[in-house]
Image 1: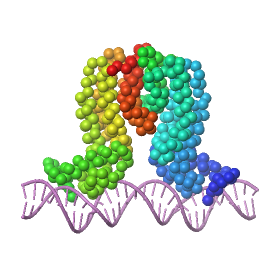
Image 2 (image 1 turned 30 degrees about the vertical axis):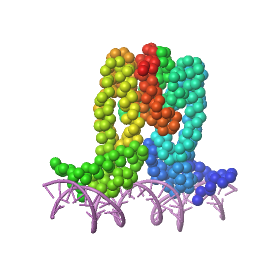
Image 3 (image 1 turned 120 degrees about the horizontal axis):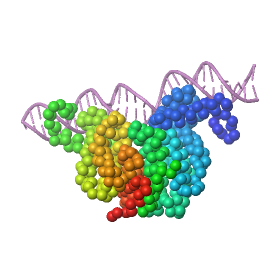
Image 4 (image 1 turned 180 degrees about the horizontal axis):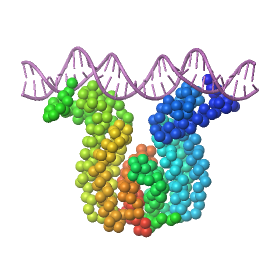
Length: 203
Length: 203
DNA sequence: CCCTTGTCGAACACCGCTGTACGAGTTACT
DNA sequence: AGTAACTCGTACAGCGGTGTTCGACAAGGG
């Protein structure tokens, strides 16, 4: 039985490799099928199912770990995006980066949604969410984003359009190459204040 | 054992009542929980589980029946919407009607998505889809909807925003009263050609 | 009024999943 | 080299779902 992480226990190198393999495999499997079983994951990880349960008490704990790691990686990527200057240009850059993450992890998000307790996901999404909100708020103050709809709605719209794009790709109606471009054009138009002209391609 | 619908068999009045109750119950249950079991459905229908299987060979067949009926009802409602005149006003009316359907049946759609074969849903959605496409095409020809993005993308955007609104309501971030208004404002802005001003509230 | 058609509950077989137990074998740290 | 940590396969228990079978019992239709 693997040592429990009580206090300052240091895992054996062997175990660390297993854990890494399991989390990697889980990320891969859950990204393909949100309902992937522990058997599948263990198999892909090249590990016995028992070993998996040795490190993660339950399927839920594993998903949580995977989700946390995905969020951390996403945060790192998003943190490097330059959000200064023209809010519309900044939004374009943010969408470009966010899109790749959504495309890669949206299936994992589904897995998390019906495995993790309700509040957990919002809790982990708080930071990325706040980043988007701040940018939108700034755009509103500068008069380039509409103020006749709540900020939370605009955030939701951005999410919806990105997830919709993933669906379109899944259905074969959209080439992945065009996704970011289409999303940006759509979101910037949707964010434009009534009466103001919709911005053209700025590239 | 209930009579199989071989040829021109006429069901007994009793059976017809049961079938109706089952389909109603299934619609209600699946609209709350896409993974509702046959036991739950039978219970809500006030009917034994065996009776259910007497009329529907499998859970899948039941879901198909429910889905078909929902689509038919939706088609009837959508068929009465006036799509002539200003494309933007027509789109407002179409969204208003479509929204209620999406709000009511989106959970059922999820159930259908992971129970019915892939092509089946698109097959049943063909008609409503075409109606939206035609309106968008007309708007494009008249110069009020953008032509720099594919029609299929615009259709998808409309769907995404509506489903996103349902999510927002679910999360308690949006009041159902504002949904249609927000969706319309967002979609009409998203559809506006670059360079053209976003339309204000037209009511 | 009688017979077909439906209905019911309980029980059963089957499936796949989660999580646990056992016992023997392997691998890493010291 | 020796010990603790780790891994493995198999097997088991439990759960909840689907679909079927059985036998007894209503209820509709000609």
